[in-house]
Length: 246
Image (cartoon, rainbow, N blue to C red; front, top):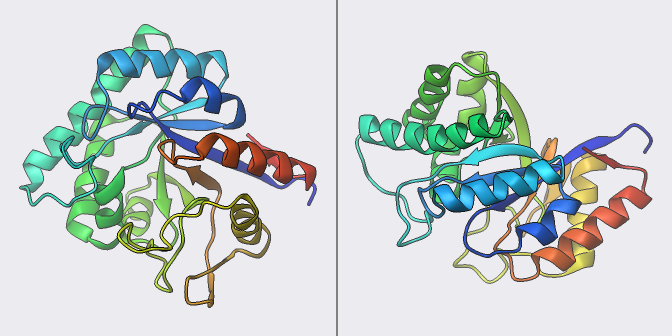
């Protein structure tokens, strides 16, 4: 397992307040920038923590929907979605400029992430925002997704992402949060889930079937009730297996 290197990312700035505890364990963070959660003050606080721990910083834009935490699809014109996503990302960039830091990546949140994975129109909106920003950054995307293909076609750097704390369907969509087995709560289950994806490039779905899945970065949701204990256990055990996190 020597020379195996992965990135572990965590969603932050979502009002949980556990960022200072999580930062020592992760190599990148996704900062909510006003769509589903967060404001300029919370963004500044998380940026400072990320700087302190040398954690790569990403924007975590979503549908503009704080009421439902960005977890419901909003039917909105492409130009309105484009304007909202661009503003969210630029607000974070302004803070980064003030602290002489750069934006490493963009990772969509919630319903927008899931929709862009399967809907070309939505994926195109996101790609057009990135092109307009004219920055050298990466887009965290699901393996074999629509947005991955659109980004590659437009010469945008991508990193395939998988979820450490979520179960998968056979089509590689995430099990709905409305279902009983959507979220992983057991540390051993999470470790085996992630280790299998790293070593064998496959995921065991809720039906028990093994499906090809490539990933370079693995997400633990910051609002997971057991986020800290799960991520600490995961990182320790991966390092014990010789896997580097950076």
